[in-house]
Length: 153
Image (tube, rainbow, N blue to C red; front, side, top):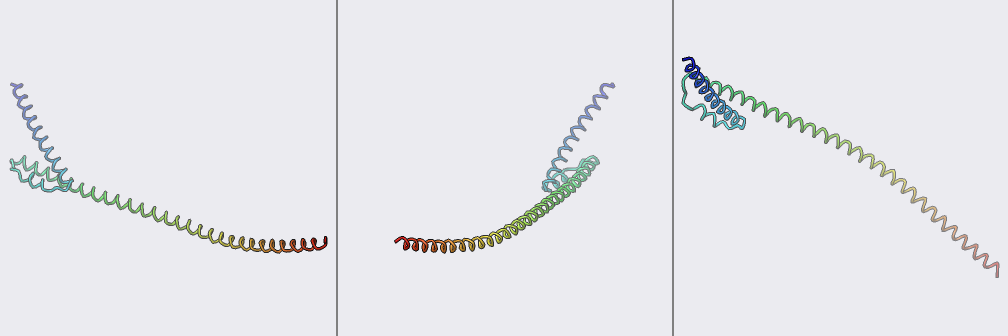
């Protein structure tokens, strides 16, 4: 008799376990749909025929899990948005730093270029002065050679 009683209990437990597994898989489906923002599955799931107090408890559990999943999905959306805003702020900060560094490099390059332009101008004047001095020296040497030629005659 005890064997029959334990067998019946085992069957009931297996039946409850199967129902729980089906309910759990249905809840997981609903939760995944809610996370995917597909709320049409809620109407279908909650519109299924009620089976007394157990069905009501199951619907309450599902409703609570759906609410939790919805809140989690909304919180996830906000956290994703918050992460994106933080990343954008970091990129903007980095771009500003790079822009400031580029402006400093540009300023230094412009200063160096103006210094080199002044130096080039000074070197051009010096070159011009040396060329005119060379020309005058060449003229003197030419006159001296003419004088020497005239003395030898």
